[in-house]
Amino acid sequence: MNVSKRSDIAPFYAMEILKSANEMADDGATIMHMEAGEPGSGAPAKVLQAAHAALDNCQLGYTESEGDPVLRARIARHYQDYYGQTVAPNQIAVTMGSSGGLLLAFLAAFDVGDRIAMAEPSYPAYRNTLSALGLEVVGLPAGPETRFQPTVDLLKQVDEPVHGLIVASPSNPTGTMIPRAEFEALANYCDDQGIRIISDEIYHGITYGEPAETVLAYSNSAIIANGFSKYFAMTGWRLGWIIVPPDLVRPIERLAQNMFISPPTLAQHAAIAAFDCREELDRNVARYAKNREILQRALPEAGFGDLAPCDGAFYVYADVTQLTNDSENFCREMLKATGVAATPGIDFDTKRGNHYVRFSFAADGATVERAAAALIGWLQPK
Ligand SMILES: Cc1ncc(COP(=O)(O)O)c(C=O)c1O
Figure 1 (cartoon, rainbow, N blue to C red):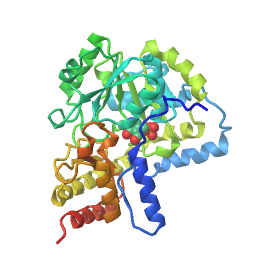
Figure 2 (cartoon, rainbow, N blue to C red; figure 1 turned 135 degrees about the horizontal axis):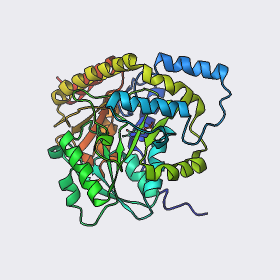
Figure 3 (cartoon, protein in one colour; figure 1 turned 60 degrees about the vertical axis):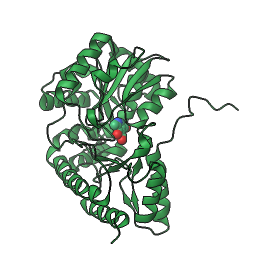
Figure 4 (spheres, helix red, strand yellow; figure 1 turned 30 degrees about the horizontal axis):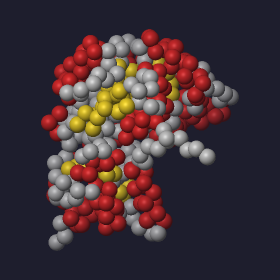
């Protein structure tokens, strides 16, 4: 029987390392998980209370395909309160994680064969989902000189026109942000050229200096993807949202009706409370900030090369050129020798990824401290 060519996409190496780490843990090894981008804490207390109340009092049937109107209105209020941006609730669609939102956005905005640009390195699901949908990925080789982010200059160097640009600020895997002036220039250039921006804003709320700016400030035609998995620490609840310009409201509605019927109802009831948990969630961010400092001190001491300037998110993207030219093998050896699980750069950058490793520091402080000591002990034995 036929197996589709479209499903022949790369694996997510972070998950392959996770599997090996779990096998080692089953055999009794102590593992320090720094491969997955998952908050170490669970959902905030008020979210759990709201979920219990919904279980007791609600029927939990389907909602409208674009989501519960109360949640959509609450998300719209969040944009007013947090960014000072007015968003019409009908331009917001609640989705199955931001992953579901990105899928709907790609389907609504692009046709088979369209060319979509993104920085290399980028979150691997962009590349792999686009290629499964029959779209062409155009990698913009972005290094430390542009904070690993796309720029107008990089876009201008592409020889054939592109139809879309994905940006993420802060980014996964580097945590870097696009400077405001460059973000505005990118949005203006893309609007002029008819290039649709998809701005993945899932790491907003987790920043260590300037807060992140939404693309809504610069563009009327961009799509925003965001969700409850990172700042709101609700990964397993599988809830996100997209904000789309008026021309995409109806296409998104039709696609969501047919592909998902509706996003998870229990999670939607609970998520309404998430926006009122800022104090608890900001304590998580303070913990990430401490973990970030631990790694920024320990990784150079262990012998890792340059670290990307991590402005936000919970990742350190470390240059390992001096240590290996095969980042996957390096991660496997590091896991065996130290119990530290990290993700090889080949997940994020098919060309230069062998020279990088990504460490997630969303875990608790004690785990990050132990990992730091283990790496120094492994690479700098006394
Ligand atoms: C940059 C980025 N976008 C999107 C996602 C998907 O998150 P979710 O589907 O849980 O909202 C992730 C998850 O790690 C991510 O790192």
